[in-house]
Image (cartoon, rainbow, N blue to C red; front, side):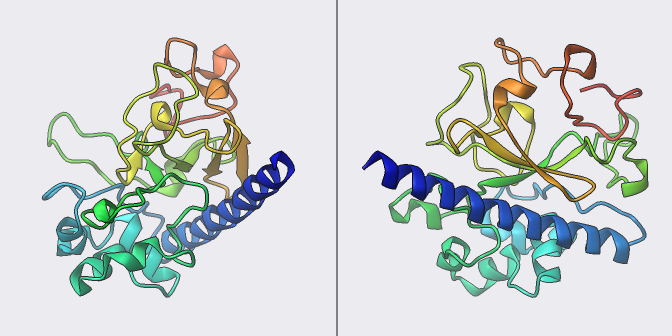
Length: 229
């Protein structure tokens, strides 16, 4: 039984890796077609709902813009069509094998994301209150900077007790990194490669984000010198 379970978990990780790689390819295509602009991390007009995803202001949010680039129905289009079950089909780009989606119809009420965009890439401007999208060129260490991560859902187990925000929202910071593959998870970096990491690789035991000086190889902001992890 253990051998079968290990084989199933390995297969789920392989499929999840391909899903996040495909998302990375769509990210690269989007930035190339939009003057280097990054897609937006979320749209909070009415929360992380089907309605919010379908609003015009959400058109440049990653879960709409990148999925359309992949020639699939965006999250907003799924919401407009009133067919939330499409979001949870195995072949949908954002459905992650091995993620603990609710078995009940509760998951149909709102989109529940098992992958999130790094929420530290787009900082709010203190003067205007707005969050500029930022550009790919402004990322100083693309091979080390996270764009997407497997993000915690309510039923994901926390590898470190002090982890937080396992909310299944479309954006996520390092504390919400899910270790759902034998206590490890997937990170997609700005240069398109994927790494398997443990939350312990990026967080201290107290839940603080490790800096480069503390031995972390992962960057969460566009410019770690100006805006450290």
